[in-house]
Length: 89
Length: 236
Image 1 (cartoon, chains in turn orange, blue):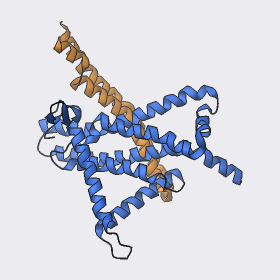
Image 2 (image 1 turned 90 degrees about the vertical axis):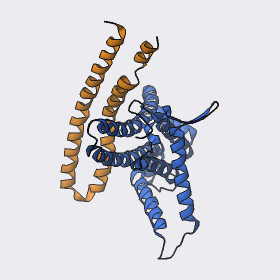
Image 3 (image 1 turned 135 degrees about the vertical axis):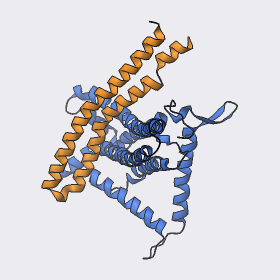
Image 4 (image 1 turned 120 degrees about the horizontal axis):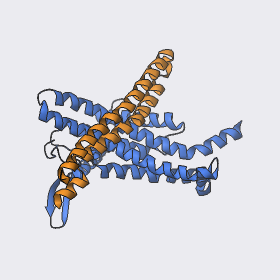
């Protein structure tokens, strides 16, 4: 197998694995966070604004790991440096 | 998505105008458009302000915006918002306008480029020590790096850099993923789904602008917090 097809295959498979596995953890974490925030709001409706703000900031922090995985998989597919190197040589 | 293809991961690569060695890419163009829009609108509105009960609706809009941002800053930092309002409010307004203008066809959000978001994150990276030193002096600010022990110094320094990187990549990834998803959906299901994802992208853009501003405020507040805790101890 020549290097072009090897690099193409590795990039595509790895990018799929990256986004797939990277989505599992944040999804579980965000689900837990939202469930806890909902029960907290149900118990203390007066604190809704504080809980919501903290929830949004926390969700963005949790979600950023999934976003890193997405960026990596986008780089692997669309802006792969090894692919560009092989193509140019 | 007009001028950006599916393969362009960042609007930096889209050259709009070239004259000799001087070239202008989409990021610079749309950043300047957003800045001009913000400046001209606020200049036009604040040209004739009224303190009476009757006020123009644009003045009402700006007052609501400024009061809302100021209230959020006060909630997060638990002190008066006057010092932080110019910096954090500017970050929020710039990011929110550049994200929400994506409903205009042909517009490419400058926050979907890693160079713009890195510049914004570096502003936060510089602003944190500036506010901290202005608040508690150089020695007082540097002291929090070696608390509780001197062994924490590398972790504090690493945390400064990693959170700056996280700020930049988070905003870039969210906005870039929004435009990419719309582009992919236009290729496979062009009838109705892109509109839904565009609406979701507007929501995400608003939330990310909020999160960026709030996180900047949290970082600044954590650099200036030590002095307040000391004052509270003295009061007790």
